[in-house]
Length: 577
Image (tube, rainbow, N blue to C red; front, side, top):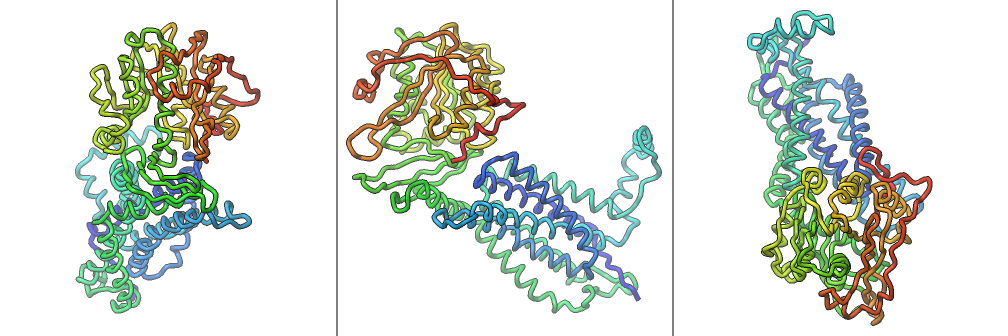
């Protein structure tokens, strides 16, 4: 006699929702990890989703060879509870030994980092066919019940405009597939709005593993407690084996995983700091020659927009260590050059104005309030726009940043807006004498918008007749492709002149100042000359001899290089290292 498994519909569909939620969220975690390590947000997400959908199809095809749906579904969930978090760990490990070098390493590690996508995809492809087999009662589906609620005749008429229609099909496959799609939607939304912003990648993947393990235990418990029957005699059906003892290893693994994941999730903050801090320390050290630097991560915080890392670094040959701050992978400031950077960003352009108290300034970014502190010395009026309100709150309360910004958030001529600068400039009619762009480097697709022709056109449109803009810039000698794209983007936005200059610091401890951060003053036809005698900066007073002359130049036009646009991006503008 052929037995068919009849399970409680609420449990089966609930599991369908959970497994779909976890599967898509795993792939989003993998996409973000690959973006962190290899760059190219659009590329990484596109390839990940493509491989995931392909492997889903492979899994569905292979599922035709699977026998007992009860035991195989339990196995699938336990395997996913292991493979999902392990896949994230593999991607991290593949990129945790930068000093290990061998032929073909970049290509080999890149390919290997995509294996977890395929594994989770194939296992996820097993789930829908197995769940469909578990819903053998075809007559009382959710859709059949909904047929008594929604206006079926109206729906048929609407569909009939474009399709040949008939009465609703009470097939459980449609029901399982519909709930699966709903779970996928929930997974993407909850990941983006809750899990990633609140917990980051490491803890998020542990939460997903916990959900998979709990799903496996819930399913096993429901069957073992007699909630699954054979259609013929209502006796408990344990699947093809008929022996629940064969599940014992799976249940033990499921219980161990549940306990382990639950313990780690309860201590989410410590786990995130330990794993991410260790990785970041190794990555920072890898930027120097072997043995040249030692890095100790002191604190690690995550905001909805970026990862904030404070660390102590000791470089061979220097007398003392210093504290630095990073936002994601980009260095934000270090003790030794925080003053020179902000003197170049703020005090040099402010020295072009004879009466600074009449100057209206737009500060884009600058959430650490250090630029505001420099501007306060001139009595200017400041509108500040920064998207990361959490980081700004941190800067107001953090002792380390407080030593540099001196409580500048209380300046009475400061008006701060927490929001997107692009949107702000589109909505405001205000015009400014000086626009300061204290924005992160363009390290990924996410920041390309602030390096687009559309953004710089907005900046130019909001300058007064004699207004100027200032931004820091990557060196054209070390980032040639970025420089060409950046300059052509500025030209396309209407800026045709720039005044390049740099600040100078003793970076190697030999008592000689070397060229440091590079800056551009930008204009279309106004060419005000900086006068450092007007600058209120002890640093510029001490280094004034470094600036022999100020030379406004026409921006070079590079042939064959497209500007970067929101709608026609030039990915050469991204600086990956």
